[in-house]
Image 1: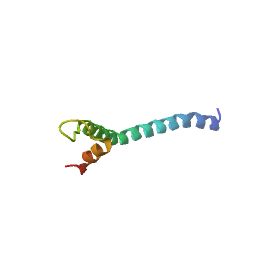
Image 2: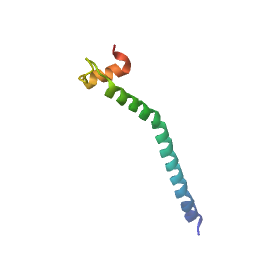
Image 3: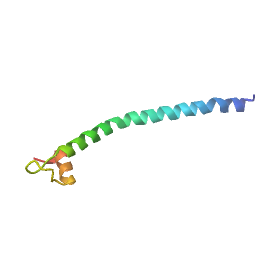
Image 4: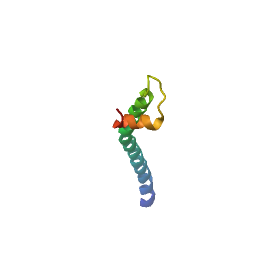
Length: 70
């Protein structure tokens, strides 16, 4: 085998490992955003604005869940 063929054989697994590692790091870095989104969705589902009825619009619920409400 020539040096060129040997380097090709060695470089493809290296690229695969780098790709896998970067996908893992990206998924780990997105976990806090996913957790925040879950808490926001739970807050929006549980927000009631008038007499215990779920009649508030989504924009006012989001506003309330982000600290803008009473």
